[in-house]
Image 1 (cartoon, one colour):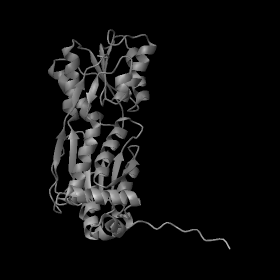
Image 2 (image 1 turned 90 degrees about the vertical axis):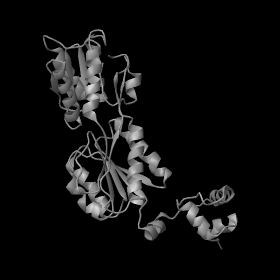
Image 3 (image 1 turned 120 degrees about the vertical axis):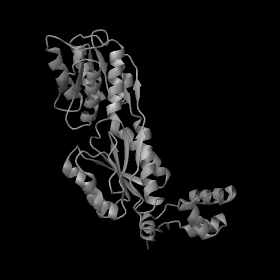
Image 4 (image 1 turned 180 degrees about the horizontal axis):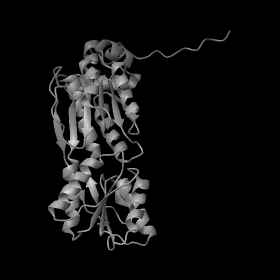
Length: 341
């Protein structure tokens, strides 16, 4: 007669306690992400070694039933194809995983209906907190989530007015960053600077910074709005600019993807960069460093941005009293000088 296979039993915290020669309560506190400062280092080492030896995997469902937490965050981005956002997501994941949280990503394609999906996730109890870039949802849309105890943090392009809802805001001042980028070009002798922007991105704040700086310098702003906020949009804008009888000496693209499209068209037209025309980008994605010529741009430190966002939302979920007023935190930027401008 064939013997039935013996299924391996899942290791429990009681097994770890027995192997480490400590109480089950001690194991629960150490592995449950509680503070470990009150435990001797030797005790911590025995518990962690026993857990590894037994192949212990926490029962997330049981934890959720006990703590009413899913130990999951949602990270919402408008375009996962834009290299800016995967770097942001990695920052969120790095910080969240350090606190025992998983991260699920929602790519919305800047679509209002897709953005609303994350509201359903929250009300269905699938996530404890939401971090995201939202172009359609407004603060009042998140009110049911905040009443249900779901943490919400929005990553913005400018400071938001403080409202009654406990919705946190983390932002890089894109208007100030675009101002700094435009001044960089002005200081290098450029007076004919054209900005190219596209639809579906943070173009408004960046265009405002550029326009204000040009007017303060006594110069006429020149903004070309293209179809897309990507390489194709940048290429279309560059072709329109090259078709003019009078060309600018510098192009400021509203993001690095548009700048890449601009540079491709300039190379095809044998326009030398930066001698014939300088190019400035915005975001400092990885490709900016390896382009020929390397791209002068604005760094928003998106990995750090993601980590800070995760820490803030986890703090609100775990440490702040319910209804704690909204917090606003500004993050730094830096103009990165390279060969294109």
